[in-house]
Amino acid sequence: MYKITEKKVLNKDIDFMTIDAPLVAKNAKPGHFIILRVDEDGERIPLTIADIKGDQVDIIYQKMGYSTQLLGTKEKGDTISDFVGPLGQAAHIKDKKHVVGVAGGVGAAPILPQLRAYKEQGTKVTLILGARNKDYLILKDTFESLCDKVIYTTDDGSYGEKGLVTAPLEDILKTDDTIDHVIAIGPVIMMKFVAKMATAHKRSVDVSLNPIMIDGTGMCGNCRVEIGGKTYFACIDGPDFPGEAVDYDGLMKRQNYYKDKEHECYMRLDNHGS
Ligand code: NAD
Ligand code: FES
Image (cartoon, rainbow, N blue to C red; front, side, top):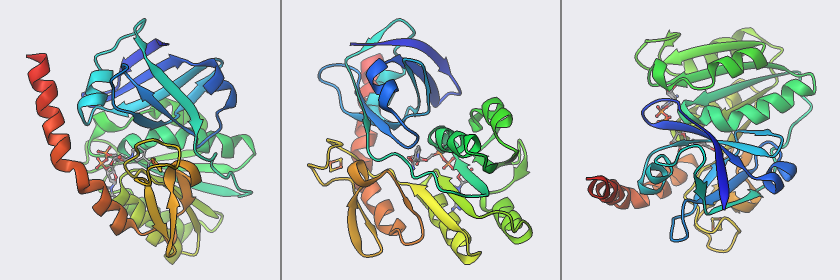
C-alpha cells in the first residue's frame, strides 16, 4: 500500500497529490511515468511524474473518468493499492541554449521536471503556459521561480494573453533567434500545431504522447503511435518523442475509441455517489 502524504485541489477538475514511494523516487528521471491503481480491482492509471522530493513523488491528475474521480475522493493519510514505476524512457535532455516549453492545461505537470533539468544544466528556459481560463493555469508560482520568462494565455482572456499558446509562440520564434528547441506537452491538437510551427521556423521539437495505455509494459500494443511511418509503443519507447513526424491525427482518432465508455464511467460514479 502507498500512503498519500499530501493532497491539494488545484481546481474543480485537477488535483495534486504526493505519494510516499521511495523506490520510484530513487530511480525516476524527467519524462518517466508511473501506473497506479486506487484499489485491488481498480483500473490502471498512467501519469507522468510531476516532481520528486526525497522519497515522495508528486502527481497531478485531471478527474476525467471513473478511476481518476475515485482517486480524487482519497485524502492525505489514505492509501492506494499500487504505484508502479518509474516506467518509460527518461526524456532526452539535449545540449541547447534556449528552450521554450509550451504547456496546455494539465500538460503543465509533466513539463515541469523537463524544464527543471534544462535549467539545471544552464539552458535558458521560457515557458508559454496556456489554459481555458485562469483557474486552469496550474503551478504558476513554481514556474515563475524556475523559468527565465513565463508567458500566459487563456482561451477566454481571463489571465495573460487571450487566445491559444501558438500565438505567442509564433511571435517569439520570429523574433528570438537564441531559441533552439521547443517542448510541447498538452492536448494532442496543441502538440500537432506547436510541432508544425516549430518545424516551419526550423527549430527542433519534442512532444509527450499520451495514447490510451493498458499494461504499460509493451505487451498489449494499445499505446502504439506512428512516427515517420514507423510504429512505436509510447509506454516503453516514450512517452517523449521528437515531434516533427508524429501522426497526430491517427493518435487523436485512437484516443476517441473509448469516448462512449468514458461517458458510462461518469454515469457509474454519479450513481455510486448518490
Ligand atoms: P485544454 O483543452 O483546456 O487546452 C489547453 C490549452 O491548449 C489551450 O488553452 C490552448 O492554449 C492549447 N490548445 C488547445 N487547442 C489548441 C489548438 N488547436 N491549437 C493550439 N493550441 C491549442 O486542455 P486540458 O483540458 O487541460 O487537457 C489537457 C490535455 O493534455 C488532455 O487531453 C490530456 O490528455 C493531455 N495531457 C497530455 C500529457 C502528455 O503527456 N502529453 C500529459 C498530461 C495531459
Ligand atoms: Fe500496452 Fe504500451 S500500454 S503496449
